[in-house]
Image (tube, rainbow over the protein chains, first blue to last red):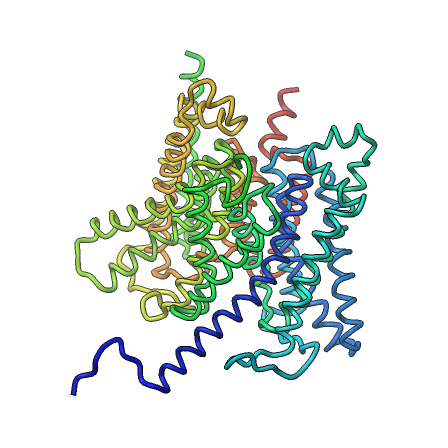
Length: 304
Length: 307
C-alpha cells in the first residue's frame, strides 16, 4: 500500500512538533549568548576601532579558569565563577595595556596581526597546560523545567536570564549614566569628546573592562551547556564577527539582538537538518551574503 | 634602464639560488630526509610569497592562505581516487578548484575595507575544516585522503624548485609593474587609490587569483609528494605559520617573505618533536616582530644598510 506523501501520522506529528519547539527554545538560548559575545566584541571595535581577535580566546579561557578552579582546586562553584570573570578581566587588561595600547595608532593590519598572534598564543598555552581534550564544566544549578513539550535544563534558562539581564544593564549604563554617555561620546568623536573634558584613555580602559566582564560571563554561561575545547575560541570569534557585521556598526542595540537571533536560528536549523559540526557554515554563509550585498549591515549607518 | 638592470639582477639571483638548490640533492646522494626538508621549504616559500602579494602588497591580510592549497589538493585527491582521467586534466581541475576557492574570500571582501578580508579568511578556514571532518565518507575525516606514489620524489623535488623560481620571478615582476603599484596604492589608502583612478575591485580580485594560482600549484605538488592530504591543511596553525613567516621575513617584500619562509620552515621541521612549545614560540615571535620591527628581518636589514 502506498503512503501518501505529506501526511504525517499521529506520533510522528508530535515528534515533529517537539523538534520545532526544541529549535525555537534553543534559538532563544543562543540568541541571548550571541548577544553577549557580539556586544563584548563590538564594544572595543566601536570605541577604539580595535578588532580584537583575542575576544573568543578570552571567552574560552574563562571556561577553562572556571573548570580548573572547580575540578583542580576544589573551589566552590560560586567562587570559581567569580574567579572566571576576574581572570578574564585580568587577561583582557594585560592584553590591552601590554600590547594593544602600544599599537593604537598603528595600521589596522598590525593590530590584526598582533591580536591574532596573541589569540594563537593563548590557545596554544591552554592546549599545553590543560590539554586539547574536551572538558565538562558542572552546571551551576541542577534540575530541568518542561516548557510545552521541551525539557530545558534550569542552567539553560539561567543563561538566558543572565545574558539578557546583562544586555539590559548595559543598555541602561550607556543610556543613563554619565560614564556611559561619555563612552558613547568617545565612540562618536574622540577629539571632540576630549575637548569637552572626557578622558578618552580612561574611557578605553572602562570599555575594555566591560568587554572583559562580558567575555567572562559569556564563557561561564556557555561552559556548562556546551563541551569546552580550545577550538571554541575561534568559533566564538566567527560568531561574534558575523553578528556584528550583520547588525551593522552604529546601529540600534535591538539591531544586535535581531542579528544574533538570525545567526542563532540559522546555526541551529543547520545543526538539526544537516550536521551539528557545520553550524559555523551557516554563520559563514550569512557573513558572505552580508558583505556582498549589504556591507553596511541590516541596521548599520555608513559604510564599513 | 636602471630598473631593467635591477630586475635582471634579481631574476639571475633567483635562478642561481634555484640551480644551487637543485644541485644539493645529487651531491648529497638523494638523501631522503634532506630532499623532503628542501621540498617542503620550497613549498613554504611559494605559500608565503603568495600570501605576501595579498597581505604585504595589497593589504588583504589572509589568515587562510593554505585554503587554496587544501582545496586544490583535496580536489586532485578525489579525482585520483574516484575517476580515471588523464593526470594533466586532473591537475588542471585541481588548480581551477583552488583558484575558485579564493573567490570565497575575495568576492565578499571587494565592497568592504581590507580589514574584513582577514576575518572572512578566518571563517572560511574553519568551515572547510568542519566540512572535511563532517563528510567522512567523501573526505576521509581525520585521516584525510591518501594515494599511491605516482611521481618519484626526485622529480617532485625538482618540480617544486622550478615552481618556486617561477613564482618568485613572476611575483617580483608583477609587484614592480603597474599592477604592483596599483596594489600598493590600494594598501596605503583605498580612497586615494580610487581617486587616482585605480579600479580597486578589479585589482583586489586579480591579486587574489594570482595568489591562489601559485598556492594551488604548490598544494598539488605537495599532495603528490606526500601522497596524502588531511584536514590539518585547513587547520588554523598551518595558515598561521604562513602569516608568521611572511611577517618575520618582511611583509611587502618578495625576497623578505621568501627568506622568512625558507628559514622558519626549516626550523619548523627541526622543532617538530616539541611542537607545542614551538607553536607558542612562533605566535609570540609574531607579536614581538609586529611590536618591535614591523618591517620584518628584510625591512630592518634594508634600512640598516641604507644608513
